[in-house]
Length: 221
Ligand code: C5J
Image (cartoon, rainbow, N blue to C red; front, side):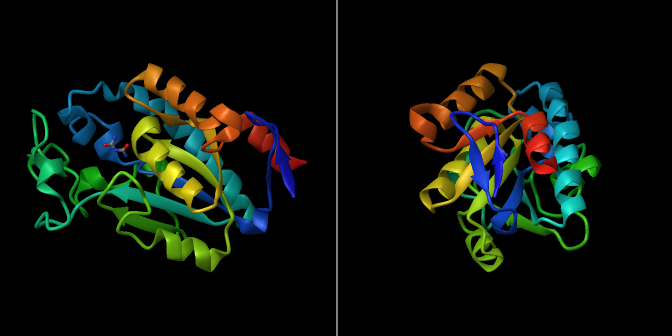
């Protein structure tokens, strides 16, 4: 077992029963001209998560530990996009509209790809998901069962939407979940801070959080 200094208390995991889950590190959320910006967000905050997520990927890859990437996206005919999701609010472009990086949040379009720094490599699982949570309408649960995982390390964007939703789904399914603090970002710094607090409140009601350095120290011991 590996023991990581974390909050609210030490996180213990068996590396042969653990996977890294990197949520939605897509150009549509991180770069100007994508889905995130169409919703009126300042996407510059997102850049901060790239370096730490890349480092985390490297740590897992060096050890041959499993890596799963998710991408929030929709079919070109929008058959998996509920009208409520597409029609909500007053975005500058809606899901499926043509933007500077192709059609917004559509599978296969440049904007829906993972940023090159965090791109999947051969052998890694990529889960396309129509919702915020990565378990909804995907094979993630089956993939994790096949791996025999009982602990998940989380990274990705955005902290309070797809990362938190997926952590909550995983927690309800019995997984111990650890979020790496610098490897996640929100368009709203205060939402990131609140989400980290919420996750580890009440004795870790959703899971644990830790700085990347603490995770790295623990796995190098
Ligand atoms: C959002 C996500 N924020 N990946 N998606 O709509 O968090």
